[in-house]
Every structure is written in C-alpha cells, then in structure tokens.
Length: 87
Image 1 (cartoon, one colour):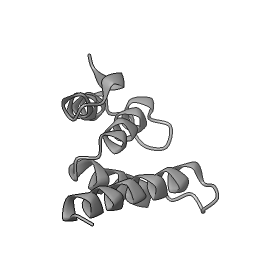
Image 2 (cartoon, rainbow, N blue to C red):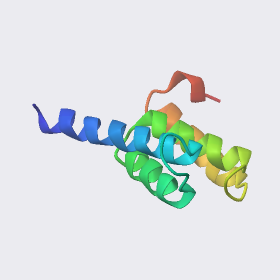
Image 3 (spheres, rainbow, N blue to C red):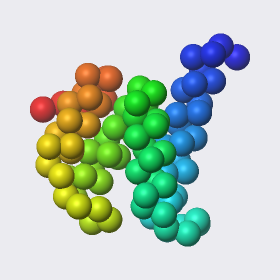
C-alpha cells in the first residue's frame, strides 16, 4: 500500500466516523469530536469531509451557524475536485 493510499483511507475513515458521531447512530452523538474528525480529514485533502463541514456550518443545526466557514469549506472542496461544491 502506498503511503498516499493509506492517508486517503485514514481520511475516509475519519469522515465516516465523524458522520456517525454527528448523526448519533449507531454511535452516541458527539458533535465536538465529529467536527474534529471532519476537520482532520478535510485538512488531509478529503473533499467529502470538506463538503460535510460546509454543510454543518451552513445549516447550523448542531453548532453555531457560520456562513464564512461554510463558504471556505465549499471553496476548498471545489478546489479539491468535488463537483457538487462548485460555485
């Protein structure tokens, strides 16, 4: 396994765990930990995690709404190649 592949797998795993923590199923809801994991995955270049952060900050359901952070993560996701995030 190439190191890049391993890093991508770790980022994907962090994103999935964060999703479960944010939803509160099948794990106990932990928004703070979920945001930390989403951010770690996003900082590693994982575009789906960037989209998840954009959505979380844009919706403001589980945390304070922050349009500036939402926009920042949408732009980064688009730059990382996520087609759904293009402006």
